Length: 229
Image 1: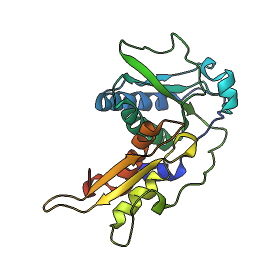
Image 2: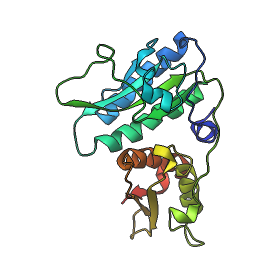
Image 3: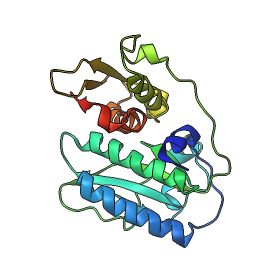
Image 4: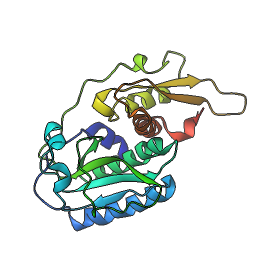
């Protein structure tokens, strides 16, 4: 499965089969986690065979079941931490999908279990991501129209439309999709620019959602076609 195929196949999964991660999958995930931690200046950690984080009332409210493996999304406190958590965390989500694993971004429906992760001075936990072998592959949810989140028109290039379409398949908090993409014409001798913006939300998580959506946009549009404004 390619990453583009993973975008189409990925759906949030909250119920998992009672089986540990295969050794080959663990090795592949650990290698990818090390890569994104280096690139994103993060401290993401894979926790295995630990059921307590998703046994509390919040997890039941979120309809989580059978979660024993998860990613703890950690980084040094900074203004752009949520953006990086989203952008690089979604790389792990789609990579896991290519391995045949299922995932779900989790903002509140978990309990922090001391001793299961390492939290260094100045670091913060921003989210969890459940990971494992889903009881199902999840289901698609209603998404906004492309014109509701972009200035796509007959004059914008096809790659821009593909980028926005990929972004609309990105997971966001309660499916709020509070983001937008604006095509900006190229300056002489330069690539066209794209401006990504977050919208307002009482729920929050818009910085993280925008980071996730930007990674999807890059996969759909091709980074060789544009630069971020």
